[in-house]
Image (cartoon, rainbow over all chains, first blue to last red; front, side, top):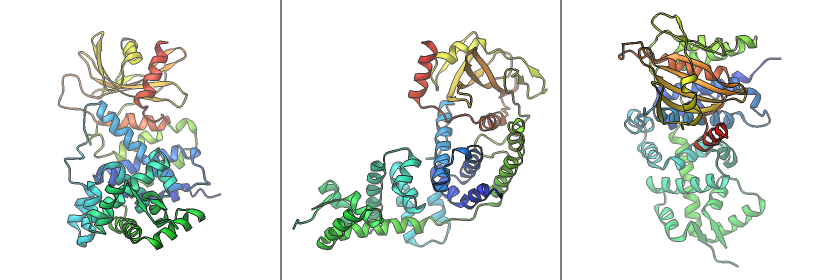
Length: 181
Length: 241
């Protein structure tokens, strides 16, 4: 029987690379991270539950590999100069002939707190369910939902979509009252 | 009727069940403010999705992935599994992560571990005993000098056989510094990996591939993820108890 597991991984390489760039902000680091992810996935394939989607499993491996590496770099006293490099998202926005709207969106995502940026990419961009995103991030599903809601409202305000909606949350603690019947 | 932002967002994403869906739908119908917020949730998601389209995988990365898959699928004999990824690493080399300097890369596995000198490729004995007390007590991120060896603990992880392992860097007098992995077994600590990180007397040259080799060794032996501070502290206290 043909083993299509490697092919299924290859099909998801663009998704892995997109998420890796969002984490590392540097395409060369992202490519290294993708390679490590694929190697780990091949080694750990017996841990993959075929009843579940492959993408969240791979994205989780990728994210954990990134956390491992940043933690080790910190122990070594070295630092990956993420903040001092041009952010890949903005870099892409500046170099390509993108619509102003797209550039503003990328810059707004870049400015979001890391936790909110992460869930927006996993859910809105990669199309994961809240539960799948929670598994990738190793947090509760409620945490994913609250970060995602705050991040999306902040993003909406930043790019000029219905700004009153985002400011509204500050005064209502995130809840909107509707007259009861 | 109160609708939280999370509920409204889940409604926008089609993630609510029947009862809650109907409740929020009715609230949205009645409340213009909710419709504005619903619009913000829907449009922000679409904007993010449109702003980050998938791009083609660079040929160089595709080649590296193909090589990784070929090496893995060709590894039919478990005894060879440790070796093949290492060979692949030395030829494909990660450019950015640990540096790009190609040098003799060195690997020691198991009880007969040895430290190879990158200049001469001659095996050099390394005794783990002077650093064992450091491995048993020092937290990752700290450095301790004992018996003339300045040891810096990098990270802790669990080996495939369940052994508690510690990655460290050691500065040695009159010889090459090294990176190593010591693991605690039923019979005591044993050195499972060691590689030189610089040549004696030449502080300008650091064979970064020693780190690559370590990473390759960790993957080939299915080493566990880096432990959290809490997990490590628990295992360290177990060493003393």
